[in-house]
Length: 304
Image (cartoon, rainbow, N blue to C red; front, side, top):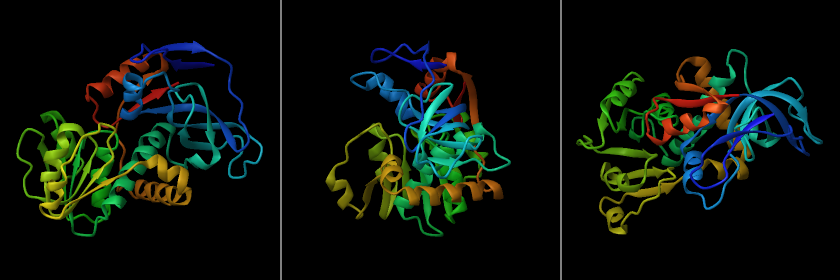
C-alpha cells in the first residue's frame, strides 16, 4: 500500500510503498477513503524532535477485525482516531477509537465532522456554556472553529462571535450564522462569557481580555503561550485546558456520547461541516501548507 512519511524534522513528506498492516487484538484494519489533516499533526512534522507516524482521523471501510473485536465487522463504515500511520491507503484503528458512519453521510463528511466536532464540543463542555451566555471562538474559520460556532448556537448560546485573521475568513464565518465576526487586529467588541481559543501564543492575552467578569477561557491550541496570574485575578476569570485525546483514552463513553450528539445535530441540519479542499496522498505537502499558512476555510482532507 501507499503511505506518507518523512525522515527528519520539517520534512519533506514523501510517498512510500509498504506492506498492508495487520489488525491486532481489539483493532480494526480500515481501508481509508478520507483522512483529516490537523494543525497539531502539521506542527509535529515541523517541531517534533524526531519523526512521528502521521496519524489522526480516518474514515473508510473495515476490511479486517482483530481478535476480541465485538462492535464492528468486515464491511462496516467507520471513522476513528489512528495513533499510528493514518496518511495511508489502510490504517489500524483501535475499536474503542472508532464509531460507525451512519447512512446519508460519506467518508469526507465523517472526517470533517467527528474529530474536529469532538474537539469543539469538548471545548464547549469545558467552558460550561449556559443557555443564553455569549461565546467567542478564535480561529473560527478552521476545521474545529467553524464547527464550534455552529455547536455553540445549537447548544443555546445567546450571542456567538468568531475571531479571524483576515477579511475573507470573516465573510466565511458570517455565512455560518454568527452574530458578528471580528479580526484579531481590531477591537473585539463587548466582553463575552466564554472564549474558545485555538490559537494560543500572543493571542492568549487579548483572548483573556475579551472575557467578562467571571468569564472562562478554554485553551485547546497546540500553540502554547503564557498567562500572568494577575490577569486572572482581575475580573475573577478562569483558564481551562482541554485535550480530546485524554477524553478518548480515559472516558470513551463520554466521547461516544458526544459522537452521537454530533451525528444527531448533523441529521437535523444544525451542524454542517465545510470541506476547504480534498488532496491526493501525493499532495500531502500541499495540504500541510494550506494549514500552515492558515489559508483554509473549513476542513482539509486527504483522499487516498
